Image (cartoon, rainbow, N blue to C red; front, side):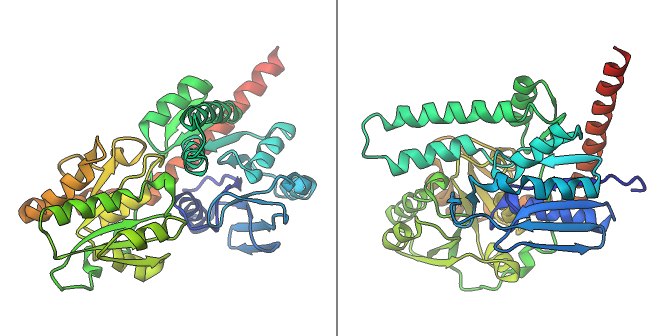
Length: 397
């Protein structure tokens, strides 16, 4: 790539442990490897600025009044106080385009700067925050009569607000075709697919370390209500009812549902958060991956499981259903009981399981991060061109 595009990137999640943050870090790494000038403005425990090659990190600490949204993700209602500091840095950097992500304290400043400084903007959708919020409301206020109606109302309003927010950038990227179509229809912007890649050397079946003949049902991700992790208990009940004893649940992640799983799963290993080689080994040690979340816009973990040679059972709601080829690399569950039925089926039919594992690996390794991020930089240039056309038209008028 010879053409250089100066990008000011405002990721709402960067240092946290989640799929969106991982994707954002990989994008920054890609910019560094391809020597694309990038200013990455993100939250951190302390303020700092550092430059590594073509990438400058400008990290800012949130205030003590920041509201904790997840294990390590927060929203700071006072973050706008840093607007002037960030504006000075943007004017110094002189970006060709501003890249915003979700409706969060960081990206809101990016939106304001794009508008006030007349800089082309691109937005990427990483998290279904409307479904995330709805699930939290149902869990926290489950004792409240009519909570389901309240949750649905909140979900509708938050989604509507998100659609308004994504009308601001010139180009919008999202991780599955349903979102691409909906964002294009409701924002009137150029709407394109930004999938997710996987490192087939890092996530590989060759990293399996166990050989004890136990059948391992795996799960990776935040142990939160919106991830529907209690479904794992239903899967175990089906195994017990079928008289199966040589199994174990391998659960990677942390969250407030951990206590429930510890108390209600009989045969399990709960590892907490894992990263690097221990995470790759955990994936490779699984035989079936169960991911019942209905709120993920993509579901990186399902693709990582596939790359590790693990068949995955995912929901027919959200992004993971676009990763899994139903009946080939895993199953797409249409009903809650499908997770248990399919897991037991694959335990009992090892020939089918072996074929799915091989197909899962083959499917995942074809997805290249570099190809995906090359497309993102093409979209940056498209946003710049759209802005230039608009300015030219206004000049003519």
